Amino acid sequence: MTAAAVAYVGLFGSNVPYSDDWDLIDFITGARSVTLQWLWSSHGGHRVLLPRLVLLGLYKISGTDFRAGMYFSVGLLSAAAAILTWASARMRGGAASLTDLFFPLILLHWGHFENLLWSWQVTDVLPTAVVCFLMAIASAYGLTPNPIIAILVALGVATLPVSGLVGLPYTPALMFWIAIMGFVSFWHKRKVLAVLLWIATVFTGIVVILYFRGPRTDIPSFPMSIAHWRLALRTAAQFVAGGLGPVGWQAGPKARDAIALVLIGTGATLAWKAMRREKLPYRTGALLLFLIGSGCLAFGFGLGRSGGPLQGRYFAFAVPSWCAAFLAWRICLRPRIAQVLEATLLAVIIAVTPFNFLAGLRYARNFHSRMERFRADLLAGMSPVQLVAHHVASICPCPWWHFPDVGLGRAWHDLPPPEDGSPWMRAVSFPEIAGDLRKLHAAKVGIFAQMKPDDPPLRDIAPSSMNGFSIGRAPGGRATRPEDLALVITPTHPLYVAGVRIHRPADCASSSLSVASPDWAQLFWKLPDESGYMAPHRYVFVWDPGKTEQIVWIFDTIDQIAFHIGDRNVQRRLGPDGLPITVLLPAEASAALISWSHLGLVKSSQIRWPFNEVAAVLSVVGQAE
Image (cartoon, rainbow, N blue to C red; front, side):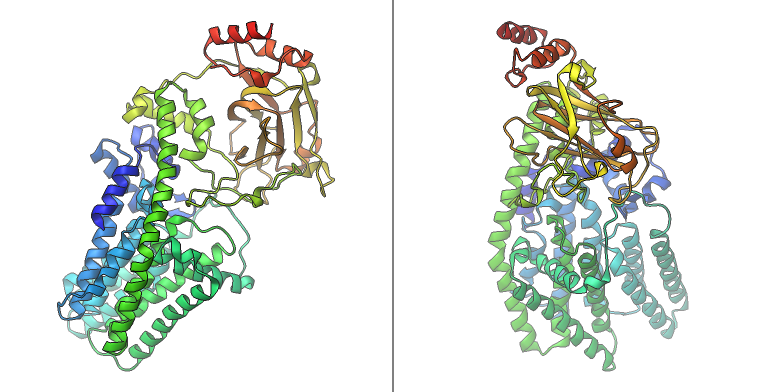
C-alpha cells in the first residue's frame, strides 16, 4: 500500500503550487522573513505553526520541490499504519493477525487523493498521524507510568493545538490523559514525572486558549446554529462514513446512520467497561478518550458544514474513529465477538478499496491534466497574467461562495459537482498569484525559471456609449432595488479583452470575508457562446485595507460584463457617469478595435491574436478591411 501511494504521487503529483501552497511563496523565495508572529497567525481559522515549519524545511531540503510535502504525507500515513499494526499485535501478546490489514488499507488507498496530491495537506495529515501514534501508545501501554512513554505522550498532545484544527478537538480529552498519567505517576512515587506531566497539561491548555484569541479576519463567516442539530448529526454521520473513503459518502442515509450507531455503541461499551473498576494499564479509559475526541471532531464538522459540501481531504480525518473502534473491540467485547467485528470491518474495507482506488485515479487524471496544461502554457511563453487568466481555477481554486446572484439569470446551484472530486468552482479569485509567479521566476525555482515574466502591453478604455458600450442594470427577476442589481456593460459586438480594472470607490467599506459585510465586490463575464453567466466566469474579491484597485484578468472574447459591489450605498448610485471600471485591451489596436465594433464593421469575436504580436494585429486589420 505504501508503494502504491508513492507511485500515485510519482505518476500524478505536480511540481506546481496548488491552492494554499501559494501562501508560502514569499517565504520560499525570501521575499518575507519567517517570524513567530507569522507562524502563529491564522490561516483560514487554522493555526498551523508546526506544519508550516515542516513544509518550509521540506522545501529547503528538496530544492523547492512542491512534491516534497506529498511524499512526506505518504510517509506519515505509512508510519501511522505501521504503528497501529504493531499496537494491535501487541494487544494480542505480539501475535499478528490478517485482520490488521485493515490499517494500511484504510490509511493508504488512493481515495485520499487530495491529501496525497497536495503538498499543503501536511497541515492536516500531520495531526492525523500524531493522533494515530498516540492511539497506538494508548492501546499498547494504556496509562502505564513509564517515563519515556509519558514524555512521548505529553509531547505528542502538545503538538496537536499547534498543528491545525484537525488535532484540536482531540486535545482536551488527551490533556485529561496526561493529567491522569501524572496522578498515576505520583501514586507510584514518581513525583518529578508527575509534576512534568501536570506542567505539560497546563501548557497545552494555555495554547488551546490562545488558539481562539486574537484577530482572525481571514475566516469566511457563515451562519451556524445548534438549532439545526438534526442536520448537523446527519452531516457528522456522513463525515464519519467518509473515513472508509469516497464510497462512504455515497452510502445511503440508513447505512450512514448504522455506521454512526456502531461507533456510538463502541464508545458506550468502552465507557461501561471503564467504570467497572478497570485496573492498570487502563487501556479502556485511554481509548475512550480517543473516541470522545473523534466524536467532537465529527460533530464539529457536522455543525460547521451542515448541508454544505464536504471535501475529499476530509476522508483521512475520520480514519482515527475507525481505528479506535477496531482496537477497542478487543478490550471491551468477548474475544469471539471482537474477532467477528474485526473480520467484518476488514471485509468492508477490502470491498470498497477498488472503488477508492478508482476514485483516486479519476481525480488524479483530471488534476494532472490541468496541471500539465498550465506547465505547457508556461513553457510556451504565456506571461504571468495570462497564466492566471486561464489557469487560476486549476492552480488556486476560489473557496468563497454564498454571494448574491444579483439577477443575472445564472443557475449555479443547478450545476452538478464534478464526479471526480475536483473543487466545485462557482467563482475565481486570487490574481495576486501573478506576482507570486514572478517571484518564483526571479528565484529560479523549477520550471518557473523558464517563464516569460513580462506581461503584454495593454490600454485602458473607459466603457461609454462613445466607445461602443451600453450600460444598464441587470433584469433582476424578483429584485427591484438598484442595490440588489448588477450593473451590466455590453459592447456592441463581442469583444476580446485582456481584463477589467476595478477602481475602489472612495467611501467603500473594508474589510472582512463575511457575506453580510459590505466590503466585497464581484465581477461576472459572459462569453458569446453562452446563454447566461456560467461558472466559473465570476470573480469575487475583498477590498483589503489600502487596496485601491483590483484587476480581473480574462484574456478571452466576452459578450457582456456585470459588476456588483457589496456596499449598497455605492452600488445604488452606480451608473454610466463615474463608472469605477475600465476595460483592458491590447495596446497596439485597442482604439481601432473599439471604433470598428461601434461602427459595426467587424465582429470582435472573429479577432483572436496573441497580444504581443504586432504582425498578427496587422493581419487581422487586413482581413477586416
